[in-house]
Length: 115
Image 1 (tube, helix red, strand yellow):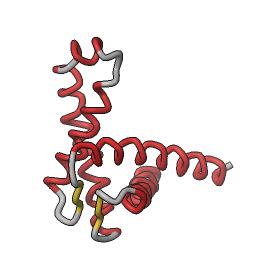
Image 2: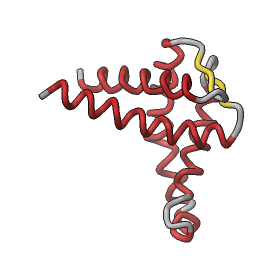
Image 3: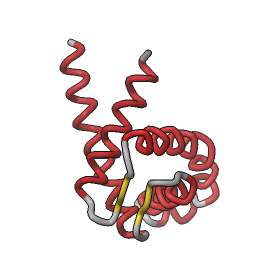
Image 4: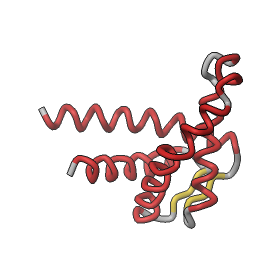
């Protein structure tokens, strides 16, 4: 049940983040659910491999290259999921930052409601 709630919270965060940024479009909530699922799979399987391969660059940039990797993962998901469109690298970078902030707020709300 916890995975299902996290999936719904992620989809809500995707919709809210897309609403804030003009360069990101999500055609509906079902698409947001698909984006949450594919983004979770990409972050579980592809992102760790990319992080290991780019470790020297990541060390030189003191971890800031991770933001670039996050943006590239968002762009990959936008190519895979129909109905989810990101207009470019900079919007993908902003989307990853806004998504992280919205997820943080939603998880804080979820934690306060469960207590």
